[in-house]
Length: 86
Image (cartoon, rainbow, N blue to C red; front, top):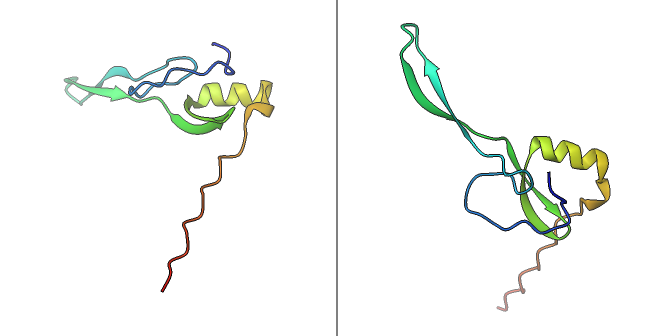
């Protein structure tokens, strides 16, 4: 696992930004043992780390919370919309 302080390059794939874990191919097996292809997706969560939003798998999230809890910062607040004039 790489250092979370380094900003991971953003990719469009559904994969963890730290460990690059992504979905796996698997087969659903029926009663007659016929295999139908399917995907086993990674459990990804959006988290703000060092001011940037990242997709992290729950394994990395658990590891980071135990070893480096100071990395987790609150999400930046959205600016309030200007009031409408009548």
